[in-house]
Image: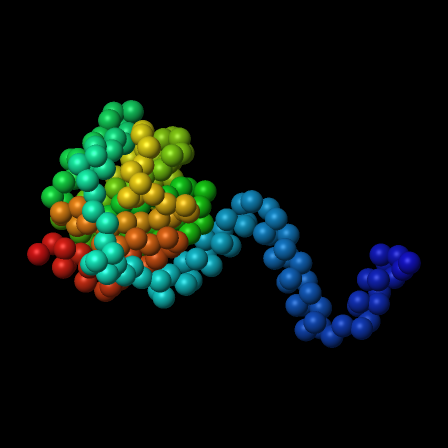
Length: 202
C-alpha cells in the first residue's frame, strides 16, 4: 500500500494547478463544516444569499386555520419570567416567529425581520419566540442592535401554531386567521410581505 508521502507526490505530479486548487478548496470547506463556529457563519451566509427568492405566501382562504379562545390563552414569558398572554394580541395583526440564535437560517433572516419591524412595528405586533436562555438571547440582540420584542416559551404551544423546524413564521390576521406559515429563512422585507400586511391592516 502506498505511503502518505507517495500518495502526495503522485497527487502533486498528476494534477494541474487548477485541480490542485479545487482539491484544496474542497478539503478546506469540509474542515470548516466540521468546526461549529465557521460552519454556522458559512450556513448563515448561504441562507442569506438565497433569501431574495423565498418570500411568504398567503394560504388559500378555505385552508386557513383560525385561533380559538383556548389558543389565545397561550402564555409566554416576558422579561424576568413575567407572564405575557397571547390574548393581549386579539384584534391585532401578528407576525409570530419561532427562532434560535444557534440556527443559521434564523440568524440569516433576522435583518429582514428587523427592517420590516422598522416599517410596521407601530401597526403590527412582532412576537419572536425562543426557548433559549434570556442572557444568550439578550446578548445576541444587543450585539446586532435588534430592537424587536423577544418572548420565551412558558406553556405548550397551541396545535394551530405547531412547527417542526426553526425558523417558522406565522402571519395572523386581526380575527385570528393564520394567513401565512413559512418554515425556513425568508425575505420578510419584501413587496410580497408588505402586500399581505397592507391587506390585513385595512
